[in-house]
Image 1: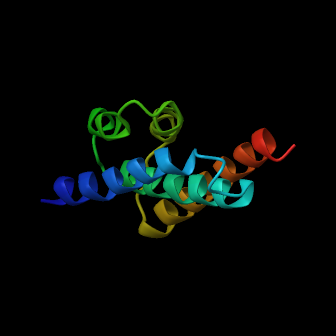
Image 2: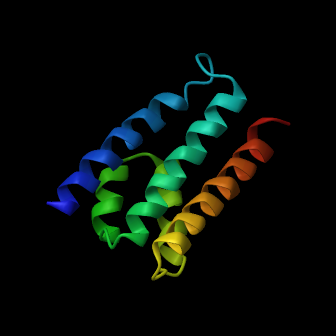
Image 3: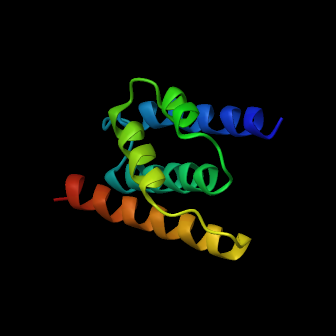
Amino acid sequence: MFHQIMLVALSGFAISAVAANDAQKHTPQETCKHASELAEKIMLARQSGFPAADAMDVAGDSEIVRRMVIQAYKSPKFLTEESKKAQAVEFGNRMYVECAGAIMQ
């Protein structure tokens, strides 16, 4: 059941990530904020034990989301809920900065 819930949650974010790539509808700040939020969800899934292969399936054809999944699953898995949340926030911040560096120049 947990894996089904995570699959649904990640699916929604992956679909909206594709929509967020439409620069005509979103400011760079909005796009990067969305990427940051998606990155946090991906890392929370990773920290919760969601299988990497399933996360890649959810990412589908979105290269951006697939790269986030790869980076998240290269990170260590933490034991405490506090550490898991901190890792997710840090990963989201890192993705925001990378996004901003790429599109806000």
